[in-house]
Image (cartoon, rainbow, N blue to C red; front, side):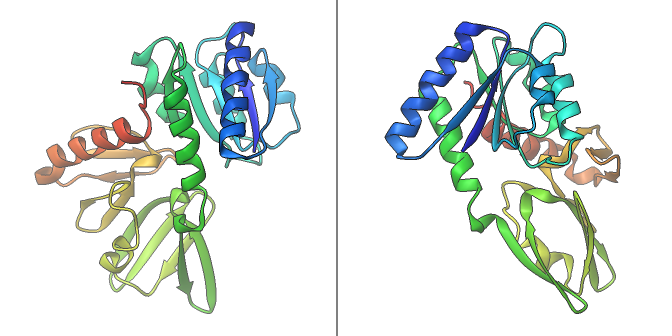
Length: 237
């Protein structure tokens, strides 16, 4: 794994590297870690990292702005793990598609679990196979923003494509991990991972689109979304 550690505190970078080396030894894997003392250094790097450990609060470019700019680069598949001494900023980090949020000082066991979950999430179980006309697609479920019913077809919007399949929304829904996707109304299944914000009636996606929430499902949706954040993005408590 190619990992970046971006933090303006030298002691924090050293602590993270020590834990990463221990993880690599225990899991018998190779980790190539690169240190960056600021966001600007990271953005100038030509390395395509698998994971970036990003400090939330840094001098100059903070972690959020660094991540926003990094996401505009060609390689947007890099996994972001935020670290901060301030747990309340965890929800803000969700805006840039954060995989985990860890509080300082870093708990070794929680970091190990985050890396274990990353390795599990990177396997082939994350993919579904779809047919659209004469074309076949292997789609990473993390890249699906939403699925929308259109008569007897389903439109699947991903981070890079729009795929129309001759399957009902229900047939697509059962292929998706139920703890990461939610049917917010009759014709929409949404991916929690790509929700940047929501209110009582609408969901806003990180690609600028939005979907409405059924009034009778508002409370249930909020509860499911909160559970998702606690499970996948706030490994801190």
